[in-house]
Image (cartoon, rainbow, N blue to C red; front, side, top):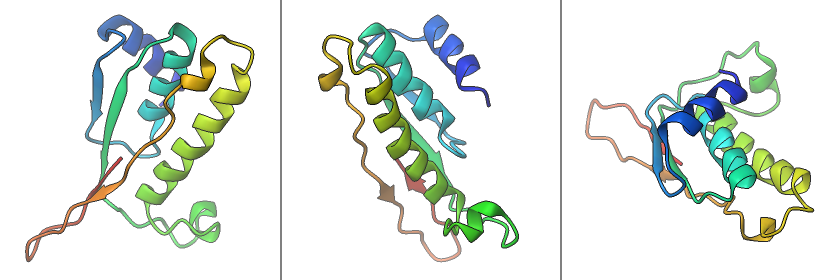
Length: 119
């Protein structure tokens, strides 16, 4: 997904204090777009990302870089995107208050269920 497409969708469909839910987070493009839009317009949107810890292909660059599942890729992207956004907007008033933090929750599955992580 293009971050700019997601930003445009968020501009059209959210208010500055909304919570954005993405049940198929993948590499966390929606989280990245949410933080970037908040930096642009001073919003305080929050996000909830849900992603099953699908294994990465053992032949992929991501796997070779140490990312054993898609969840790990998303968490790292959120970390890097937050720091990059703060650097990009460092001269903007109030950027120090931009919330780039997140928590990760893991479901403890019942017997026979798949695991999932929330960020």
